[in-house]
Image 1 (cartoon, rainbow, N blue to C red):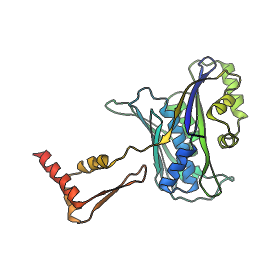
Image 2: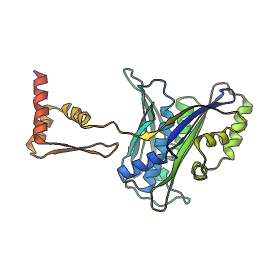
Image 3: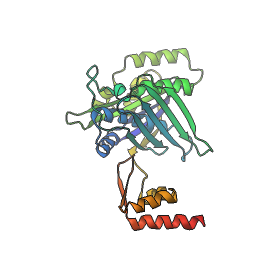
Length: 295
């Protein structure tokens, strides 16, 4: 099944809902960063969430960054998403190995105690930044807490990544359910009952349920209506020109220091792990451009 997000409403638009299947995106990240299983799970859950949150943005130029920063050995997870379903991300330490906890990958232990930060760049002078303390480090519970406290939107978030015996990604995805203001108590009660009886996300995906199927289960009895379906993928916008512009932003002393080392420069993109090579002659040209620009 190709990766995609579906968006919908229920109970006469008293509820809005999102669901995603993201196995291919998660497997791409695993291969690009050579992540361990627990890191794959953490990164995959965060990317699934970011892909759904990206569809919440109002403008096509908006960009959203989701960060989990903790005291655990993985240190952090950073994921960026745009309004077109393009997602990219990386972990602070991609090779962390931890023993299972309750027969499951210990994502919370890998992240540890810390903060969840949501950064929305909407083209204004300063981006909007919402920060909350991590509740469990398991991502879904932390986002549920974030939506309730930082955005005052009661929500239920479910996320999951299941690995195969050879440590590739079997299934990945999730859902986000949100209540609009003044939702009827009967609707809330029905949702609570549905969510209480819900199987884990990975179990539903493993059974072959699509994002639409998952929302039909979560929103049973609430007349769900699907309003949008959008492909999602791991897409990094790095390039040779973009990296060169970053080097051009360095100070003249820094560029001269690189030249004095008398070695070609290799710059690696943190998001996709791609390497970019720059010869000494290219660095000299960049420095020359900096000097001419300063005149």
